[in-house]
Structure formats: structure tokens, C-alpha cells
Amino acid sequence: MNNALIDELTWRGLLKQVTNESKLKKAMSEKAGVYIGFDPTADSLHVGHLIPIINLRRITLFDLQPIAVMGGATGKIGDPSFKKDERKLLSDEIVEHNIQAIKKQLSFMLPNIKIINNSDWLSSMLMIDFLRDVGKEFNLTYLLAKESIASRISSGLSITEFFYTMLQAYDFYMLYENYKCWGQMGGSDQWGNITSGIDYISSQIGHENSNAFGLTMNLLTKKDGMKFGKTEAGTVWLDKNKTSYYDFYQFWFNQEDDDIEKLLKFFTFMNKEEIDAIITAHKKEPFKRIAQKELAKRVTLFVHGDNGLNEAVKITDAIFSGDILALDKDFISKIISTLIIGESKKNVNVVDLLVNSTIASSKRQSREWIQAKAISLNGIIVSEDYVISDKDIIVNDLILIKRGKRKIMSVKLTNN
Image 1 (cartoon, rainbow, N blue to C red):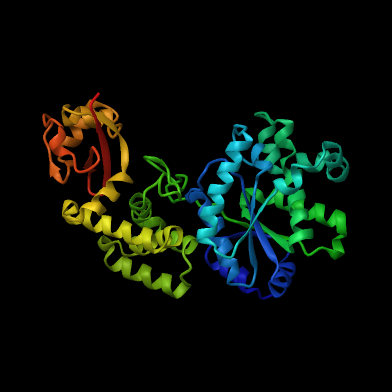
Image 2: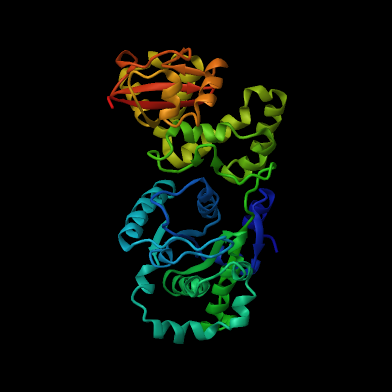
């Protein structure tokens, strides 16, 4: 059966599994919804969430309605799927705060998305009702056979987390019944939860009446085997206050040549011909990093809009030209305030400053960088005995530190 969405996901290397292509095609003709769940474990999404978010945008090109389900209820438990340990339980207040922050991010990237909170139906449900109406439909052998559950049995799995797949199945049923949501999409690690939902819907309305289907996407792995989205500095967040526009842009700009074609397929909406042309041009002059620039530009634009992209590019150009202090003072102030790494006392030498502000892990590392002329202060290469004082402050007690060609940070100077 010809299916344009399946073809699109396949050539990009995204598609892992689909439960029923005919039901997917019917959903497209009926403009039905497809959902992805987001558990509010933090007050920002990160780059690991971008594949599902971009895929929610991608399905709109094929007449499907994107739906995001906030785990206002399930987020208080945590999905055990392929996690080594049980998640830390969060308070109601923290969960609600996180939901509001995530909703804001999703609405910016996907203006036409429906955002629904599963707390709307789960929080008011009595345990007896859940066991009677939902639990009775799940055979213990069936649940234990799920890889996401089986993988945790040996290390320990609480009853709370064991219930998760049933809760997610009920979510799918409620979305199916009330929001014309016929599909669920997720990473390949969500296959067990997705099929549980499809089976539960069939148990309630009959298999022959169900239009429910599921799609799973390949998890992104880099050629060196490292987990995508982790950096030396830690998680790359979508919140500009956690990861600045500049650092976000640089994360994509610094991707390796070996991974760049896959990343363009996964994270952009360029068609095959456009990507092939970019890769061809890149291979002719790899030192220009043509593909990396295109990736960084498109992903930053999607996540942060024109303002975020323009600021990231302006900072990048200023840093590479070595002329950042020639920028407008208000803009310099804005740049520096988003790049704060740590604090240090005034009147200490640059070796101690790098350690105090956690830029360097030790004095030895600090000296090695300085001796290699890898450290500049406000655009000037400094020696080990250079003492930081008020004269170095650019604005708001902040100074600018650059390490190597691309890493730029600011440090706040204190009196004690």
C-alpha cells in the first residue's frame, strides 16, 4: 500500500515500526490525531525531545493533527521503559510548574498543536475503578513479556512503575474516545506501551471497530556510539536560560562530519534533493562546515525563532572575528548575561579564576590551557599571572572568557 508518510519517514531513516499501515492511511484521510506523551520531569525540554517534536510537525504535512499529552498524572510516577533506576517522585507543585513551562515551549514550536493533560482523567479516577475497568484487561503474563518491563525485573521494579503501561494504555483510549486521536507515536523503546494501548482500545470497542495504530521511530545513535544530546557541559536544553542561543547553535554547528547527513534527515524538513545537494557541497569543501551551518541554522530557527537565530549568528560572527567588544554595548550586555558559567572573587590570577568559576577542573588544567594560548579574557590572550580586577569588568560585574575557537563563557566577579 502506498503511503506518503511511511515513505517520508523511511527515506529519512526514522521509521522503526508501524502497527497497521491501512489504519494510518485512513487516519490521514480523516485528519485524525496522533499523539506523543511528555512527562514533566523538568521545567524544560531538551534536544533529546526534538525528534518527537519535529515528527509532530512533520505529520501535519500529511493531514494529521498533532497532539501532545502532558503527564500531569503519569509524570508523578515515571515510565520504567529501559531506565536503569526508578525516577525520583515530584511534588504536585513542581509537576504543574514543569507542565506550564513545557506547554509554552511546545506551543512556540508547534502553534497548531493540541496540548492535553492526562491528569484530567487519571487524577479523579478511583483505584477500584481503575483495577476493575482497566486492570482486568491486562494479563500478568502479557505484561511481563513486555521488554520495557522485563528489562527492569532483575534490577527491581516497583508496583507503581509496573502500572505505567496500563496508565498509558488508558490515556490512548481516552484520547481515542474524546479527541479523535487514532495514533500514538514514540521512540522504539515505546513499542510495548503503544501496543498495550491499541490492545486495550480493541478490548473496549472491538478489534473490528478500532482505527487505533502506532508508529515508532529509531532512536538516534552517533557513529562513535555516544548518546546524542550530551555534551561536556551536560544537557542541551531548549530553554534559552538553561542553554543560551549561542550554545544551542554551537551544539549543532560542532557535530561531526560522520553524523551530519543523518542529523539533517532527522532534524530538518529539507527534502532528499536539498540534503543531497548540501552534503555534496560540504564534501567538496568540508573546512567550510556548510552542512553544519545549515543544520545549526534550521534547528535554531525551529526552536528559538528568528530572534534566537539572529542573536546566535551575530554572537558567532563576533566571536570568530575576534571583535565581540566592538558590538553595541546593550547587545554585549545581553550576550554576557546569557553565558554565565560561574563566579570568582576579584583580585585573583586567571589560573584561580578558571578554577573558581568551574571552567577548569584544576589549576593544572587551567595552566595547560593558558600556556597553549587557548584562554582569552575579553578578547585578549592572558598569561598565568594576570590578576583579574575591576578594570576587566565589561558590564554588571561580568567578564568574558573564551576557550579555544568556539567556547565562550562569562564569569561574575564578586568582592568576597
